[in-house]
Length: 391
Image 1 (cartoon, rainbow, N blue to C red):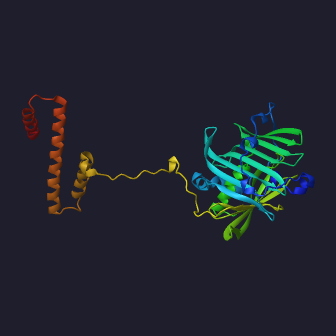
Image 2 (image 1 turned 180 degrees about the vertical axis):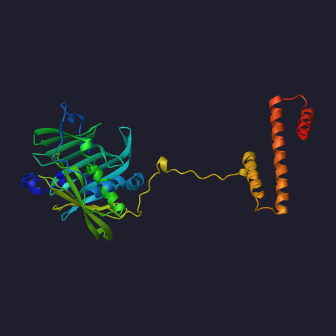
């Protein structure tokens, strides 16, 4: 369960509630260094490898993910900005960005999502940085969530990494002054499809862009306790949401983490090009809404190297002696065919044939002059053409 979206009664008594600033628009997402998990999260001991109770994807989910390619995913590269709201007004900000990147010498997508705001008077924040390849396989993901419940703040950092043969998951949880660490690993061969939070952002956009409402669509994911469980996607159908006083047609999806201890569901409402308009945790009074409706269906982007197409150059065969000679020879064969016995055509062919022979003779003479470099070019020309005539 996302820390920033848990109901207030689960977080702290009323005495710990902080005063919400009057203007939450001045609350900026400038906590990057604080939220990133530090490298000391890596533990020295070898992690325990989990081999049991690892769910696999549904056939439909597996086929859909395999069908994705860079042409589809590149259309999903754009930034989004949403505002966190409730019945009491605006509470904070939520931003998402996707861009091209490279990690471990592999081309991938860099996905960044951040939120910062007040939920029922409690300052909450989350920061997600993920590197995901074109198969929605997570190469690395860093996730940090905090809830400033005074005097007992809660802080959770996780680090997910793909090594040569394993996925490694590290969690650091700080509750008051107590810090606990845990580390788990899974063989990649045992988890063919694992969709984490960063990959989920791409997957939800892709499902909408491809107009693929999920039916029996589930994949493996990781819950807040670091356990692998199913993540189910359900089609919510078409509806309309009010964005900036305008009703916008949207398509809804629900993602449910089937965790044994902490089940949780989110609802996403997107327009047909994959832009997120509304996001809400089921059961939470907090709603994230887009601040504007995109004017273009697909965001403008720079083409990648493989997308750059060079213009076709016109073929000027008339000025190329070799190509023109081949053209005349081919026309010769066509003219000499039984279907072309018109005397006028034969006369025209004889004229072209003589012209071609003359060109060839001149070329041969020029090559002779360049190779032998005679002192008297005129005498050499007379000898060359006399010998050619006699032959």
